[in-house]
Structure formats: C-alpha cells, structure tokens
Image (cartoon, rainbow, N blue to C red; front, side, top):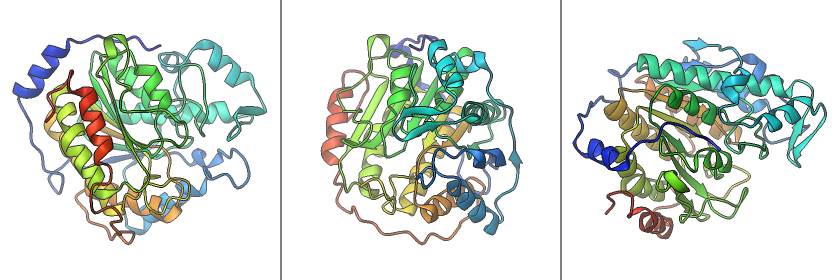
Length: 368
C-alpha cells in the first residue's frame, strides 16, 4: 500500500561499504535521550484483565522514577488524519473511528475514545522520531496502545494504528531512508504489509515463528521494488541471548550497514524476555540491553544518532520496567541493576533461522 521514495539498491550498497562513518560511543559522551510520554496513555483499557493493560506503563514509570531517570519528558499532540493516511486507508480509519463499541479481533476491543488514544500514541512516536531526526538526540516513546500489528486496512493483536509506520512514512516524505528494527516477539505483520513493496524503508524483524500472527518466514523478502528490504529472522521457542547476538552480527548489522539509513526506528517489544507470560523466547534483561546498545551504536555511526525507540509489547511487569529503565539509563550514560539475567540460550539455538534468512537475502546483500 505504501508508496514512497524509491532508491537504487546498488547505490545503497556502495554507500554502505564506502561512505563516511561517524563513530560515537554509547555512554557519558552520547547525547542524552528524551522520553515521550503522556499520562493519558493509562486511559486505554481494552477489557478487564487484558494483558495489554495500564499497569505496563505504571511499572515502567515507577522503575524510571526509582532510578531517577523519569526526567526530560515531553508530551506530543495527536497524529493528524493526513499523517495517519500515509499508511492507513480511509475506509479503515472511518470504520475504526465510527465503530463505537466493538472488536477489531477477539483480543482488540474498541470503545468510545479508543480512536483518539490511538492517535495520541501515534503522535507521540511521530514527535519522538521528528525530534531525533532534527537534533540527533535519541528518543524513547513510552506509548499505549502498541502498533506494529496494524496494517493498511486492519487492526488487531492489541494494535489500532501503526505508530512506527506512521513515523517512518513521515520521514520518507522528507526524503529520508528509514530502517525499522522490530524486536517484539511477535512478527510485525502490519509494518511488513505497509512497506513490503517499498525500497525506502528497510524492515527487519526478529520474532518467534508460529505464534500470532503466524507470518514472517525467512523467505518473505518483500515484493516488487521492495524485494530484499523485508528481513525476517523467524526464531523457534527457546532462542535467547546467543541467538540474538548471532543474528545481529551476521544479518541485522551487515544489512543495515549496507542500506545506510538516515533514521533508525526501533519497535521495542519486551515480550521476547524469558519472563514474558505469552511467548517462548528467552532473551534476558542484559541480552535486551546489549541488543539496544548495539542498535544505538549502529545509529550513531551511520546516521548521527537519529534513533527513535517506541514501546510495543511486553507483558511481565518487572521485566518491562527493568529493561526499559536499563535502556534509558544506557542511553544517558548510566548503569542500572539487572536482576532478570539468566542466559537460557547459551548455544545459538536460533542458528537454523539465521542461516535461512541469510540464504534468502544473499541475492540482495553482501552476507557471509
């Protein structure tokens, strides 16, 4: 559905191999990250006892406050209809806005006010991304509801509007290349469908294959002009720290390096954590921090710290608070204590998935 600026892949690869690199250590010398948050995000209640509940953000804010890191917080206006229409069809927006009480799927309820809260979440990520692109100062948008399962003409999976896709399309409209790194445990089918045929957005997803939404095999590489710009790493249950490191070293980093983005967006779901109640991946808190630290360093040397992180899933409250606090601390040159540190994957359980991804993408990228 998305139509953006089309770039020549050969030029992208040459720039990725030969272009100037700006190195910046993630630590005390790095630009301090900005938080984007609004207490109205707590007003979103899909249904009683739903796992995607306000307590998720309450836990994050409480952990940040305890660590003295809930500072430099900005609010943002809601996304506008023209901004949202870059990725969502009019027919979907009208039906969602006018639904009143209903369901987008069995787990994604709509109430009066849901549409406005979804616009508010999209506006926060849009604001955070614009800020990072303008200032070279990373941002972390702590939003609800999440977004990466919302496609051009559908919602579902707790998602209504695709926050990260709306922000990415806004950057493409400014003539920029965007890399989206999706670390949620569930495949971002909505983001994939929006940008599947676009060469201006690189979509990279690490996820548990075979669970909701059932999409994201390694062989799905995009369509048309977008072939090679959709990268899926479909892990099996039990993949964790060593698998993510290997995937990053062998696929994620080399492809992003060659794509040479102007902005990096991260769909940061914390549901790949070993304590998450609804998935079977086993990433630890240190593993998450390492993954985001590597992504931050990549954005620092490729695009001058133009990095925007946006919260997606993650349903274990302590894991959520611990990881997000550690990520914000690392972005601000601080180290925080990590308790949930077990390494349950010490033998690269995800090697077959990584190899499948590399085979699928060798025609498009220089991969070993």
